[in-house]
Image (cartoon, rainbow, N blue to C red; front, side, top):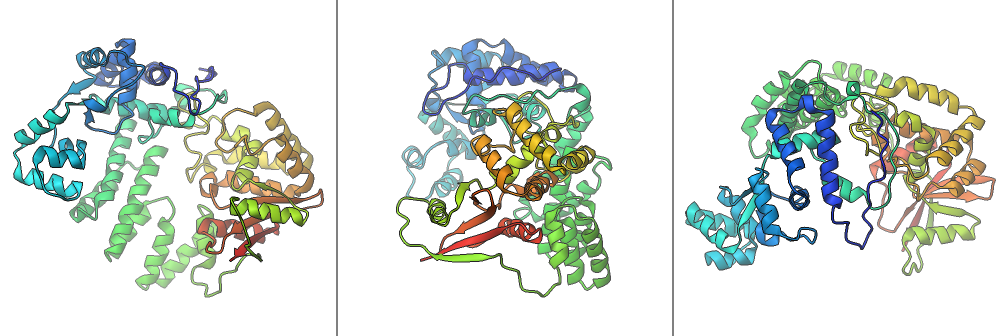
Amino acid sequence: MSSAAPPIPSLRPGEPPPPDYYRNNLLRLVRFVMAEHADLLMPEDARCLSAILEAGKPAQRLFARLITRKGPLLRLDRINYSEVDDLAQALQALTDAGLVQMNPEAPAQDLLTMLTRAELRNRFETAQGTKPALIEMIIEHCAESCIRAKVMAQTPWLTVACWPSLKLAQLLFFGDGHRDLSVLVLEDLGWRRYEDYRLTPDQRLFRDRDEIDRYLRARLLNEATRSLDQLPGMAGPLSKALAECAVQPSRLEAKTLNRARNRLGRWFERAGEWQSALGCYVASAAHPARERQVRILTRIGDEQAARHLLRRIAQAPLCAEEADFAARFGQRRKRCAPKTTTKALGSVGTDSIERHAMALLATEGGEAWHLENHLPRGLAGLAFWDVVFAPVAGAFLNPYQDAPLDLHWEDFAASRAEAIAAQKRTLATPALFAETLRGTLRRKTGVANRLVSWRHMDGTVLERLLETVPHEVLLGLACRVIDNPGATRTGFPDLLVLYGARDYEFVEVKGPTDSLQPAQRQWFNYLESNGFKARVLKFKA
């Protein structure tokens, strides 16, 4: 099917949304999932989604708001939306449809958490203390029936039913269990157009229900690794469970399992259980697993194995961080500092330190733009637009994405290796590089692409870049981003500075107490090793 769709009605800052804004987003998600993923739904999932579609407009409006609230329990006295005229009627409709439960049984902890500290003290006549301390005291001294009655006297409560089905629908739509409809709300602050990529069944994230269930199990294991400090006894069973996972998992499952193995490995490492830590890292295919292996092997005295693995990393690093580690591990050399110019800070007034630097550079003949990471990422977006929106399995799940799901995954480039290599060959010709960027800007301005900020990458900036900055510099920046978008989200120097049509430089601005962060050092290492002009402008009080 074609994903071409009219723009989503937009929220405008400072103005209330249209009455059906949240409802329409909900219905868009539910209808899409039922149309494109019906074969992946269990009967209870289909019933939940059908109930949403069959509910009346007021009930749908209310439900769309409730599912973005932090739960699991919601206070009835704090539910009030201007677009829902008759709250009681809408709640009754949702209750009848099985989408909401009124005053359900709940743990005392959850019930008490709904109340404020002052309400807890008033209702339960407790002494002073922090809210957690008050809750602990109340649970210790009051029966659950008493707690329920007193909370009810303060406010009734409700909970959204069929959360597993809703979470599944969000997973199928967004490809991420942590993204929900609030993403559309937060991102849609203007009129947006989306790329016209195609969505076909063979490119879905999950081929069948079994893949979904395996991924959900992997996600549970990953979440469990976050609780090891509180429940250290889980480490052994978690290690065994991770070892029993699928040999050939889907990309999303593999990413989740690698994250869990790395976190469990670090826990074993801190506990001094070196062999268990090594077992986790060997099973992981994600950075920093190999770096941690080298460090552990060195620590336990297996220098030969450490050197062998270090050579393998140097020959085929998974990412820039691995390459940097292989180059510097064991080397007792002073860290190279980037070229730095020091200036007296003087009076900044109400300007930011970057604007202060821009004014100073202007007196030296420089024309400065405060672009930061928008510069290299924007170049990559324009130069590799078709690569970003290439039809890779599992990359595009709904018609409203500004990037593929895997844009910031470590294997983004590996999954598009041939397309990237072909585009690099084209872009190696300066005239074709300039033509590509200009053509993409002309055709795609305003189309959502997470790499491109249209506020920062307009025709004026692009023409000045092409006029002044050498082709090899612009191409190098674009290629570094497309080779690993996830590792290049931060750290690029603050300012692009152009000196007429003859020269350029990238300038990182630092105040008296600021220092370079690791991501900034990695960018400077890259810029300096390739002979690109960059420096730090350091202000001192």
